[in-house]
Image (cartoon, rainbow, N blue to C red; front, top):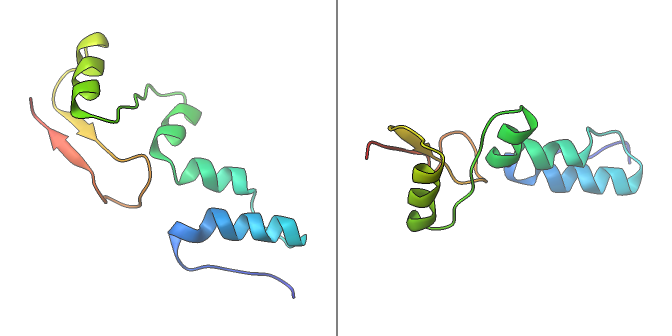
Length: 89
């Protein structure tokens, strides 16, 4: 076995982990963990990022940090624009 590959973004972290465990060439699985988590990506780039599990928590964060509208709400996981919303108020 010379390598393993996936063509699905959802599996990149797991395939990288498997490759690491098998001693096969791969990018670090930790890199995929960050790249597939929008919150962790923002933090790793030195940008402000906030996590909320409910709309009430999101509203509290917006008020606490004086975040102006519009705001972009994104799930931490997912790819491309899946689940991304622009909120005006």
